[in-house]
Length: 279
Image 1 (cartoon, rainbow, N blue to C red):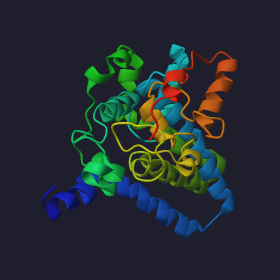
Image 2 (cartoon, rainbow, N blue to C red; image 1 turned 135 degrees about the vertical axis):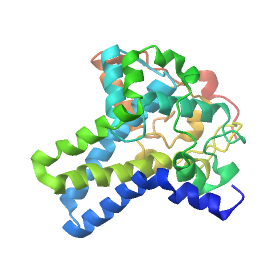
Image 3 (cartoon, rainbow, N blue to C red; image 1 turned 60 degrees about the horizontal axis):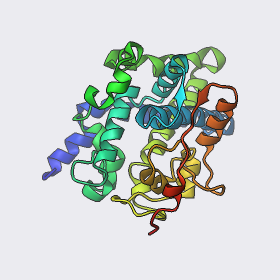
């Protein structure tokens, strides 16, 4: 990215128009209707509802296969994760697996160490160079035709669009604004902090080949994903808060679902992983 023109085309080029349109519509909507604590409460509720399906579904299940579930609930995880407007489960998992393979090395898709904060937080996703899904990286998931169908570009817009429209009968445009648009913008940036801030701020417990860090604040914002150094140290664990004081809301909900048989075989950090070399 040697020239200013290149950076401008990444952040403000035609492929980024939907991204900035959602942000602009959100700001304009809040300006028009005015601040609302009840609206903000709705936004936060929808933020955490969909954050769970991103963290439990897209990340811990599809990307790392850290637990098992039925084919039916697998489909629910994919559909609900897609309401976050972060592409399909196959795309998300393929890019995330690529990130772990090259974490903080030159081929890493979104390393702040390599290309800085803005690239790791936004630029990589807005560049237009990462829209395709490498099916070879998710061959274990691509054998399910329903997941492949959901991953198609046109189909990918259906879950978020249906969710947005579903607010209209219950509260009109006001409910759609707070329940979908505001919460979606918050969800985008909340999710992306793990790509950027979780490699820049916090504490390192374990020696890893990257700059991953643990942060209680990010863990609270992302339902446990902020224990990022733990995760990079032992990627297959469904539990990312390794110790009782490390709050991991996603894992707690998965444990509850396991009680009812919805999910099972939740992988835990091994004793060897817990006792591994400390920084």
